[in-house]
Length: 191
Length: 412
Image (cartoon, rainbow over all chains, first blue to last red; front, side):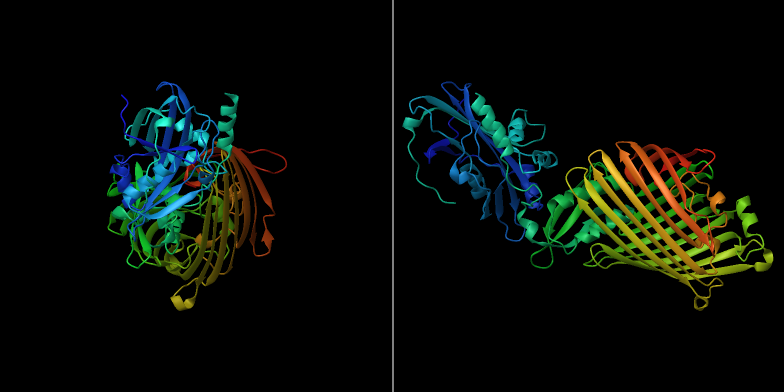
């Protein structure tokens, strides 16, 4: 069932999302963070055209969140490049980025702000659906995603091709149908 | 479609971010202490304890702590070991707590530090029962060792070890042992008429303290008091009392997965003088270097031993080659049945998965007489590194005949 859990807005030829009701810094992951250990989170944003099952493009990202034990603030580092299935890559998302001194909510928002899908080439009048999947990565299995150069996007995609394992925290949010011609630019938010 | 696949593959190659780089914001803080819950610190291997000590004073490295947790899990044979990082006492410092999860280690534990069969010399076995009371470990063991020294010594041993946590870790221990000796016929013939006195029993008392000087370097100072009941009743009981200093260096380099390097080096100087009430007066030097390299399924271990002693030393201080770990394939009683004054030995082990081949070479000297350089080689199966199991056939490399020797056991 499609529910409008995601707010969508275009920005610099990319589609970005907001999910005010999504809080993933919770439960066992939060406990690990408070224990001074970093927690990786994997994000996948999928766009389907014309029908909810007709996948057109998707972007995957991994973020590492940690909790500063002395300052009691969160820090987030984006570990992967922002590259979509169709090869689009936004300029401002290419480099590795880190944000620190964040509240839990701001850290969650920062992650969402750094997930985007290019929309050039999409007919503004065509209907589309968006699906966001978030998973807290198992620290024991997070490492194999790395190779000699860094994190592998193909392995991240492969990760989302499997169902979450028992005990793994995961969230799924969807919205649609929408049309680009009907989406208005939102008011710019601050952290 | 092809464009999409190509883009996907390229994006897989277009990676960035060093996997070794720590993304934990707490990595800027300095570790002020490391603590293992349940007082099991004393059960850990010496190299692991040293690596844990080495964390103190360093910046927090989460991936390194994960690796240490895995090693603790292996050493303690528990289901899982997690770690927590807490605020330290000093600003910008943190303390690390390792916690055993999914089954606590038993308060009373039985270990077999060494079990070996070496066909020329028979079985060797050591069993220790240990209990922990906070940071103090108490152990009681049974020993029958025909491998390490010239003689076979059998008896009981006990150890009390106390660990003090702090910025610089100090460990104190007290070892006692009572052993009965058995001498090989070759040894009896070799020492007949010499000044080397044989003894029927040995009591050992050895208090020691170990100080961590740097993350990689420890210094152990000990006083060894050995009471020897001599074979000849007229000789009565003699003492071999010495002061011992050991410098030990250990450095590990971790790569990804099972890849890594490990260097372990130690130098021990033991001096026995009349000032300590010793009937034996001697100085003994011993150096040991071990380097291990692991790459995927392959691994190489290179080991070097050198030692020498001057003065009149008891038999248990003399050097031997030709046992389950040196000149494998040779019989120590064929090389020098009374032990030697000086020794040099080197070995190279290569393993692929569980298969291992090795080559040993070494030489012994007594006064000006030498065994000449000896060599041996062998092959077999090893699982779990030096602390694992070994089943091998070894051959002394010499002209004329081939005498295979069977080696089996673990923890040697």
